Image (cartoon, rainbow, N blue to C red):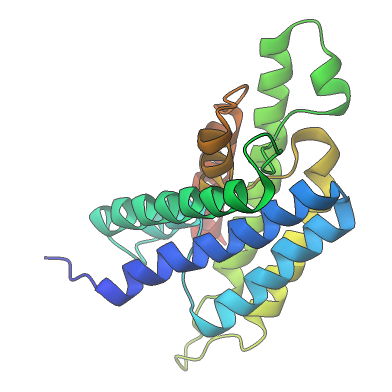
Length: 217
């Protein structure tokens, strides 16, 4: 029977709240690729270093496939992460106003310009799948324990830098979400659901594929 820690659940809520508040808030206020990528990446460095949580449904899904957590714990973590993201979006709504952009992800570039919106969405899924795959694979490799039972002390920095680079890659195509909770919170509070499915399917698929590849490696 799985054991659950209220502290860990609260940690997932608060950690995801901080990640979305700082990252999506930076995107909403500046619209700048570098500022947004650094805001997300540096926040992750701090969160992983002090909390060691997941803060991302795609990461929780991969952790369950890799048997680091159980499936029930995964579901609880995902709910906690979505709650945290919604609370963050509510704070942004209060801070920035009801008519403000809350950092909602959206398709850009050639994907947004396509006449066939569904095809643009599918390509958006492909982008989110690839960048989330690389991100989650980095997490799984960086946080694995060696034969002596020791982990990588640089894991928080490696994970944060990977997120900075990968958001940079995806920013002008999909906004570079890599995190379903990060997309759900702002979209729900702002009431903007265009292509939200892209940010649910792509990251979860990428996280699952990363876990399978990690098992092979």
